[in-house]
Length: 123
Image (cartoon, rainbow, N blue to C red; front, top):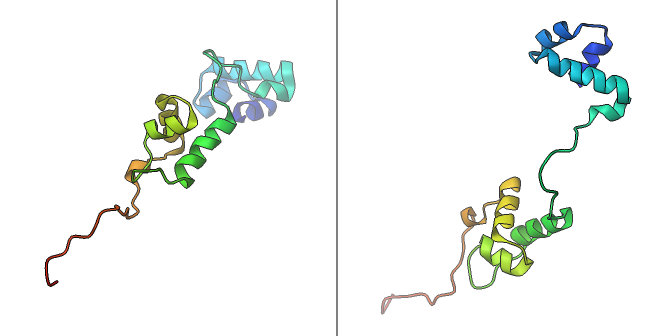
């Protein structure tokens, strides 16, 4: 965006590149794109690689499951336990957790364990 604004002021590619510490080729690319496509030219081009297989709704469901649901028979969620409930791979769960900074295994909350309290006689 800064490149296009500086170009619109009438600065040369060389001046804009030096001021913004980018290559002259990059300035030329963005100048041409904004000239040919106006505002539509300011977005990113489609990237290479496979298209997403996980929808936004599925990502939201994993995050909600992790943050709001208490797992059964354990103290915290694991990628494999969420995988069983959500029907996706543990790698996908791990990627989602990393993207949102979720670390349920590091919860700082006190966790209770369902075990009988051991007491000494007469205590």
